[in-house]
Figure 1 (cartoon, rainbow, N blue to C red):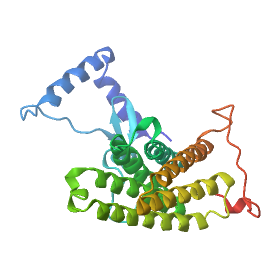
Figure 2: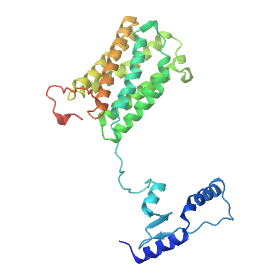
Figure 3: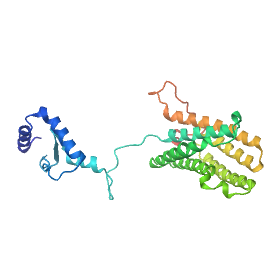
Figure 4: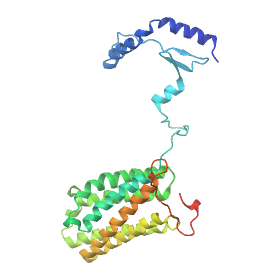
Length: 285
């Protein structure tokens, strides 16, 4: 409801800005005067307010709620209790799965000795920034959404890629600390063995999911197992087999990511989700 005070206030504003066609030029001049350098000789005019409790602030000819203006500049970073955020997160799982899939694909092609490539240096950048950092962030966002499994899996494998990249970078001095090449190979084997056991743990937690999601962790478990055995035994053929399974794992991860991205609203092609036998819809995320 408009009060008499508001009417008088609006009349006063109208009189002060009778030449409204020059208002934009005046605002530009004022901005260039005060934006570049503070000048003590210029006087800042008093902020005009309206309303019963001065809850409105006048900006030009627009009235803005003071609470909204303060919130826009001050945010909600309060040490005490604050109102819940009006924003909601999108599903970060496809991002994490894509980061995992692409990094796994490139390294697995190297492990499979595709095109005669044996040095994995090209994977280090992906492992640091995409499979590592981006996947770690996706895992943190999963935790923010309350998804314990997704947060644990994505964050952990993000940590895997970061730690793997650290082994490859001479600056960390990890490989240089081992004077015996066989000792270094066995140490990396234990590294892979730990991730094999961790993947088995996650695999058990996917029994009540979909075929695609279960297949992802099943093939990933086989991949880690073969790479671990290949390093322990020194048999290149086993390592190459692990690379082949890794490529399959990457494509399954991409399929799961596509299932989370493609909808009837944005694509004519959507992924078919097949629940495992005995799985209820309430068991699926």
